[in-house]
Length: 243
Image (cartoon, rainbow, N blue to C red; front, side, top):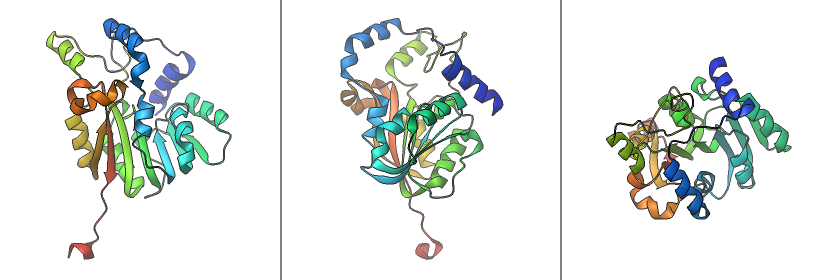
């Protein structure tokens, strides 16, 4: 954990690195059409239950998403590998129902079984060493029929496909010092769905964020730069029920 913690403190805490732009034309279009954008936080928020007891936001950063949805839950928990960002969230929160903790999820989740009603992971899975293990941990800490909402970049997005066609490596995260160094894994709609289904979830709904997001949902795998999935923990069947 120390090496990973140093990297994320360095990037998100002390230096606030400005990444090199790899999509100048897309950046130009974005500035022109920004008023039609649905943020990933807003898109995830729309998939959450109207209320619940406990929410866990993995990779919570400064706590922005938790502050956005805290009124829906009796308690909210946020974890992040960066102590800089957790310290900032703790300073801002000032509320007994909000809990922030430094945690490297690749080493497991420090919570008991079936503790949460909802877990969110926004722009997190692509940074992890072992996404399947983390998804299993999320399943463990969720109550039966608990909701897991996950958002990741979509490597199959049309502009990325064009770059590959011309022999260029798509940059799904920050391009820094010659590499897309932040992201360790790349996802498509199919691979993310399989990851969830193989680890105890069923898919309830797909969504996406970005400009004209609601018009791009019909073909997410091609038209969206990210993939958002609302999944539900399968209800476990006892041995007696099976008989």
